Image 1 (cartoon, helix red, strand yellow):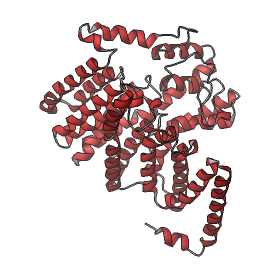
Image 2 (cartoon, one colour; image 1 turned 90 degrees about the vertical axis):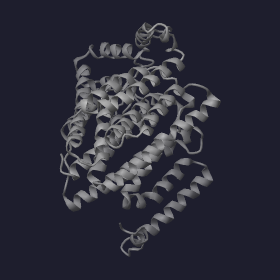
Image 3 (cartoon, one colour; image 1 turned 180 degrees about the vertical axis):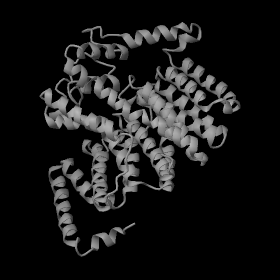
Image 4 (cartoon, helix red, strand yellow; image 1 turned 45 degrees about the vertical axis):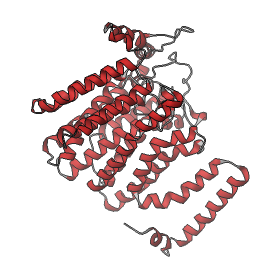
Length: 466
């Protein structure tokens, strides 16, 4: 790796860096005089840009930390709103790095995403244009769904070593596990609910369902195919507790579905291990039903789970009749799209119904669609990119079931076999959660999916399994 000091002191670059140092000083001075955090953010970015360009592995690690902490730090007013764009800035720097490498080495690693993602972007751009949408709104809309898809591409092209990927996975697991004790401590002050969950902002409460499901995929994979340690099963139970603290009712349904899928994928060869895991998971399910108030009546009347779910999913606002349940929102979006064949196929344009950090370019229909809740990934994407866009996005996700299966079948390293099994579960989880929340738009969940996809795809390529 090129030493940073040697890079800066290179005579051909010295004047450039001296000029940049003066510019950074001016920006910091303006920040101090005007107390405008925008100038501090630009100065900070210019200061770390060189380091990030030279050290791409560090850049990915910083993104990992930022997705778990930045929103929370912003809500605490420890950093300004501008700093939540740090992952975007780092991805921009890495894009330049990858383009520089491609021009120098002229070698591109092909992926299963290449064709569907290209068509997705072309049709999305066409949709924005035909709906008379501002081009920047379209770009911002693509950023919502494809930011961490770009990270996948960058990681694949940078081709990090297995050693680094294992280290990054270790850091990820550390950040994932600490969410549980943080939630426990916060629950003493906030009680049960979204304000008590983890190190990220409480307005992403859906993650108290998503993170436990991801943790189950990982711990079960490690238990079955790495080493059958009960500490892995204890890890699953910790995340049952995490979900209970978050008070998420939907977790029980998704957890049961995921457990059945993982048991099926493990196969008859692992029946003895499954027999150990099943009763422990059953206790976790029962604890979830008992300690989540809305689910507790199901202990005496199991039919309550069905009636409650139907009522919750199909509810409408009492004030104006707008769709509030997720199934009601999906039906309402279909009703809106069917009024126009263009919208049915291509939607109203990327970003057209979404809020944005850039208020000037927020979606023109953001507050006009009669859906007050339940704007899931499926609902949002169908309205913005149409059913063709949704289909193409599915084509970007499903191939990783094949990638995971291929690595799982042929890799000998038990760790990578466990990770491949985990990726199978993660892909299944995200597919069944498409109508639960905007899981690919949230930084934490978006990062996790594409990080695992990039990790397994890279290992598969390096070991010539793909």
